[in-house]
Image (cartoon, rainbow, N blue to C red; front, top):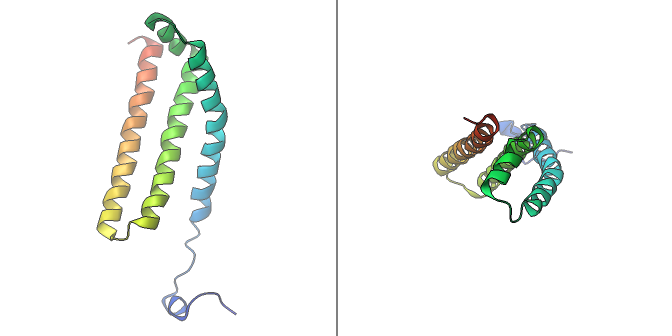
Length: 126
């Protein structure tokens, strides 16, 4: 007994088998963001009242810079994955869906790269 509709059986439409990778990436980035976000909040609390030079020195430390880059990449990738699911589920016009997916992907890439480049600029003192 098949769970597919008669039309689905005729058209041969079924699972694309691509959802597991997307689901897994979403869960792994969420898991990575928990300790990274806790570290970031704790670091910001520790920097309370610090001047600009102290904050810059903190960002320029190799461990802090590395963790900041990981936080930025994981945040924007996780957000893009989540927004992709929302758009695919709730935008029904194909043209609008494609435009929204391209906009979200492009914006996530540009903003993520901007954040990473900002950290690297402070790290290498350019």
